[in-house]
Amino acid sequence: MKNFFSNLGYFLKEAKTIFRIDFLSNIFSIFSIGLIFFILSMVISGWWLSKEVVEVLQKEAEINIYFEEGLDNIRVNNLLENIKSIKGVREANLVDKEESYKRMEEILEKEARILELFDENPFQPFIEVKIDISEVDGILEDLEPLENIDYIRDNKDIIDKLEKIITILTIVGILVITATGISTLVVISHIIRQGIYNNRDQINTLKLLGAPDSFIGFPFLLEGLFLTVVGGILAFGLIFFTFRLGYKQIGTSLLFIPLPSMEGLVKAMAIFILILSGALGIIGSFFGLSSAKGN
Amino acid sequence: MIEARDVSLVYGDGTEALKDVNLKIDKGDIVYITGHSGSGKTSLLKLFMGIEYPTKGQLKVLDLDIKKEEENNIRKMRRLIGPVFQEFKLIRGRTALENVMLGLRFLNLPHRKIKEESIIALEKVGLGHKRDSLVEHLSFGETQRVAIARAVVRKPAIILADEPTGNLDLDNALNIMELLTSFRDEDTAVIITTHATHLLEDIDEGKFIRVNQGQVTVESRGEA
Ligand SMILES: Nc1ncnc2c1ncn2[C@@H]1O[C@H](COP(=O)(O)OP(=O)(O)OP(=O)(O)O)[C@@H](O)[C@H]1O
Ligand SMILES: [Mg+2]
Image (cartoon, rainbow over all chains, first blue to last red; front, side, top):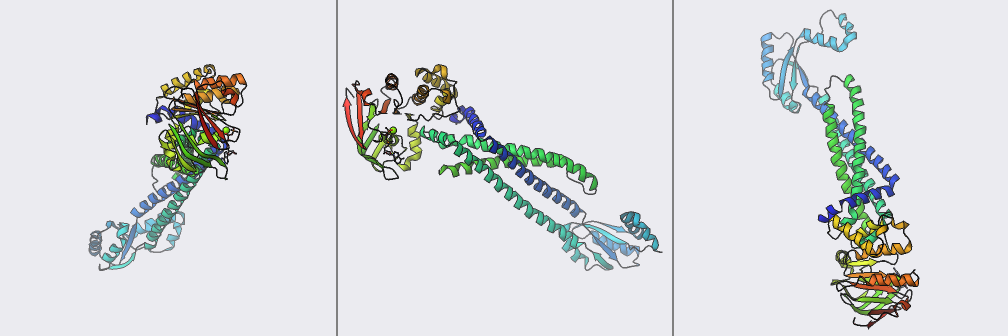
């Protein structure tokens, strides 16, 4: 350890020299590592964002229950109370004929004129039930024995589709993380090997003087770490600008979906990239060092 | 300190560089290894440093058995040796001082001490004024002195100098010989190879190892 600290200046200087000797390929490596991290972070942010969106949508998950026509208020209220007492139901509200009509008007906006073609309000009152999505099957079961229910619109296809999207996103995310992780490791260990090859005479001399492998390898480790961390910072810069642009664009057009705060996302990405780049830099350097050791 | 029993060295291509070598080198010895070009002098030094391993026989250097399985211990053993290579093996792009400091870097010394000792060593070889010059800008003789400083700075148990007089005229050769042997003391043995036997004619103390086509004969002069 004493050894290590009294030589820290030497290690840094050596790492700098190694970097300079192979300057161009080091610069290219930084750019490719930066881009790899950028792609990785974009995929992860996309994955996270869609997860958040899906969660929001899930909270909005609802089923609509239509009851028999002409049911009197007491029975409707009874039904409402029964539904409310089912496990997994978060909220149940009566949407009457007029409310139903109004909602359709809002949805149709300009096209709402076609509603005027009807002599009478064609919409039916229904009970809107907000549910816990994971309980949907149980809820449907519990609704079965209730009387006076005419028809249930459970939106199950949409809910199922959402879950499928989450699964696909997760798989894609894992694949991309793995692929980018491996490419970073390959790039790093390759550049370390290159550095070792370029410095082979010097390394040989150090061995002849009795230097331990840790002493010989440490500057290369520093170099690898430097490459990935600078690559990471580059990626972070790109992400920051992309997010700012993205939030400006999407933020206005997708108002109905509350996006997670940009600061939170950017901060999380910064920490993530820093840790990842550090770890990959060290692991990649070790690969490079141990693969070059044989020669 | 160094003891060889029936040591032979056959290179990978079948060249038999050393045959049944028996020798013993003690603490504080001065040893001259002579022989024609290609006779096996460097090969002998390579064995001493654990760069090559005996194909046959047993070789002990500083209490360590020289064989392949001991690579880690051989590294440690080398830290007790101050080698001056035939082709110097200094690190380009670094100054004279930085090269000398490298001799001390992994010996567990504080940075200040490493620097101080290195400056002293450079001064001892007469190069105090060149410490900040890049080694590739130095003359041949200066380069050689930097290599010597790097070897002696660690106060090694053995100084190994391979052909230090190789490209020098008589005067300079004698000076280098004198410089190298001046580092001999009771804890430090000095081993020098040379094919310039005329340089050794007037020397009346030391061990003389003659290598002839891989075979070794040892002769002692004076007290040693
Ligand atoms: N790595 C090697 N592989 C095969 N043969 C080798 C190797 N190194 C040396 N030799 C051979 O071993 C013999 C002894 O070589 P060595 O270098 O020990 O000679 P030397 O006495 O140091 O010569 P010089 O005075 O020219 O430096 C030579 O025939 C040489 O060609
Ligand atoms: Mg030789």
